[in-house]
Length: 134
Image (cartoon, rainbow, N blue to C red; front, side, top):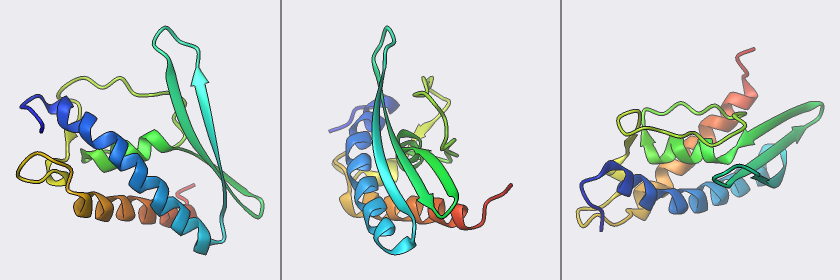
C-alpha cells in the first residue's frame, strides 16, 4: 500500500517496471533484427550505484541504452529518457511525478497497466532506433 509521499509510489513501481521492461525488450529483440547484450556496472561512489545497460547492435549500428532511464519513463509521467546517460538521476520531489495510473485503487501495482506502458516504451525506443534524429 502506498502513502501520500510521491516517492513511495515511484519506489513501489521501479522493480516491477524493470521486470516488465526486460520481458518486452527480450520479445522485441527476438523479432527486430537487433542483437542485444546486457551489462551490469557497479559505480564505486559513496552511495553505490548499479547501472544496467543494453548494448544493441545491427550491422554497423551500435546503441547503448541505460535501462534505468527506460524504467523512469515507465514509472513517471511526462519523462523523456536520456538513453545514454552514464549515471543514476538524483531526482528531487517535484521534478518528476509517479504515474499513479499504474497503481490500482488499493495502491497496489496494476500489472496490466504497467505491462501496457512498458510495451509502449519499448516499442517507441525501437522505433527511434529505426528513424534516428541525427
